[in-house]
Image (tube, rainbow, N blue to C red; front, side, top):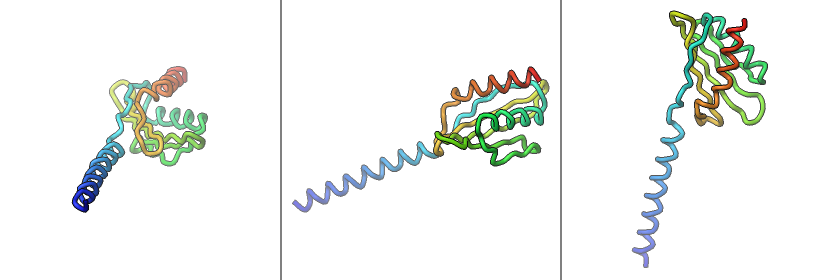
Length: 125
């Protein structure tokens, strides 16, 4: 009977070890960015991006025009976090965006409407 109990305990430990390995690999998987090309310089794209984020209720936590980066969090539920990186190209700028919720990466397709709004504002302005 004690051998059987020992085997159950060992099986439980092995199962927990396997499950914790799966959980940690999912949590640390890198987020896939949404990328797009935009008209305008890096500083223009960053300025319009920050304006759009603020209008939508985001709090800009970090912004660095020299590095072309902006990090913002949504000030209300569901608590999204966005990270933008803008680089110069020959004909404008290239933007990469990553969204997270509670530390987990969100599908890049969720940012498509935001990118479309940003693109239209840059073209109009």
